[in-house]
Image (cartoon, rainbow, N blue to C red; front, side):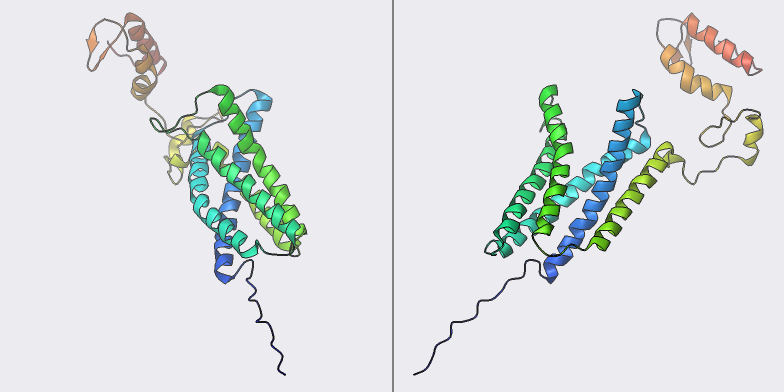
Length: 263
């Protein structure tokens, strides 16, 4: 009498070699988004505490980067999450599976609220202040919940590699610190050198222009004085129509520079 043995069931790995590569891409994008979010949150918190505005050119570049990174992470994260759930939905560790489902749902909430905050004229624009405020705080708070659920997911799953996690967090923190340090700089002025003799015109003052360039009186008048004063119906001067107040202001400016102009 022969004994029949049941065929061995094939064990599907939760994260296979190919899926692990995709996970590394998700982790890399997540680190960039986390560092970028930390910088934006730092500026927002500083404005809230001081009542001053610190949003500048670099800030808006980082805000644009936040939008781009958020869009880039959607597809790889969703693909990884769906495949990972399909590989593990029959696992006996039901607690890890349930926490994983909750983690995936919270992360989807982060992506959805982020998309809801994007304003596209003629397509989608959440203008209601109360609704926009609720969506904003959900977008800010859900990542904190997601980090907690990920910690629980790893506690009930494979052993956590604390050294790798600390190194990962250190890189993100260092990137945030670098962004905060670059906040006062203007990328448009990088690698642009002004004249070496320009400093002597500033002394004894410690103030400097962005490129240490000395601007002529005419340039100051054309860029700073004429635009707000070029209103009214008065004599035409080249391309603009100036009021008497504008002409008087321009004369005073040129006298301070040691020059005189007739308008």
